[in-house]
Length: 167
Image (cartoon, rainbow, N blue to C red; front, side):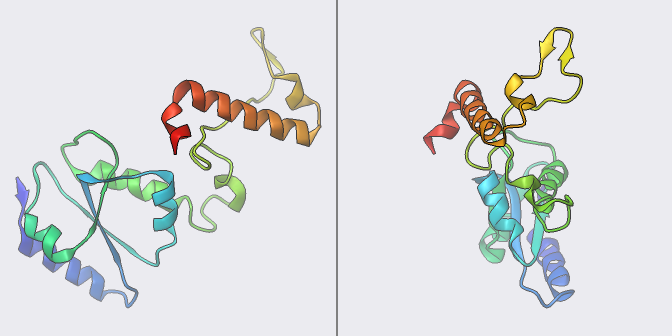
């Protein structure tokens, strides 16, 4: 099933009339630019987003031509419908909005923030089945802890996602 142009144009027009703020139109499609943390940050700063998600085969090409949306893909795979992609997209963007996570700094030191994967995390107890929390994390030396975290993030990225280091 291909979504017809007229109903989509009508829906976009109706939604845009509901608010004076200019909407950035987003078309979720496997043919779009791949969603990443940098793009999510840019989009979270936009005043208003209008998401267009399809189902099955996609959209009448005139939707792309006439509405001129930003085309975004959540990955190199195909889904039966855009609903799941829309949920992923919304969650990634909304969590960066002020007040959503409670602590504004929560999003600064996590995977993909600096093209690195996040460092290992630990909780109590100190020793669980012979697996121990690294001593540096228990030292109270914040400078050493920060250095350890940076080293671990770099090591983890090099091992698991070396492609991120090329950026």
